[in-house]
Image 1 (cartoon, rainbow, N blue to C red):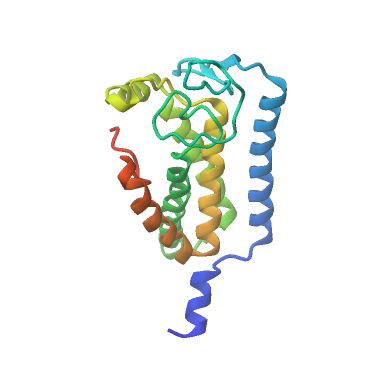
Image 2: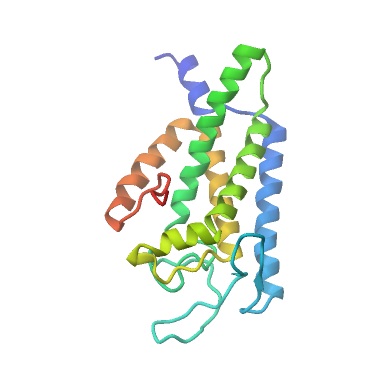
Length: 211
């Protein structure tokens, strides 16, 4: 394989507008997390249509059942604090979301370009990925899906993601999208390695089998 063939696969995009868009988007999401952390009480909740009330960012509960403080990262796969802090082991699966969404939408881009002779900009594909992940987080935290999770013993104490956890998941998805847009080879490597590392813990980066 020649260097000319390798480079497009390793460094696919050099679109300045795209990088500005993704930087601004992730920065806004981080800012929302900071605002919630600084200006809302631990018990603050929000109610969205078709969803149960969701806590914004609660305090972490220790092994004695006492509230401590807010944490950015929770390392437990299954537990009282899982899906309540900004990042947890499930965050790795959302990086894979971004990678998968990129490949799916990129295939659609190729089809549209061949059939209609119209090229979909990478920025548009990014925005579509953002919308899809927002919808994913919304549907995942619907009463129907939460009850589906809770039908499994390991999720019996699961009552949905906190708002900051959903924001963290979206950030991870966008980082996965950024990774694959720069280096598809590295992104494919990430998916393979994450699958291997996460499998012993009872879950993988692929779409959950909750359906």
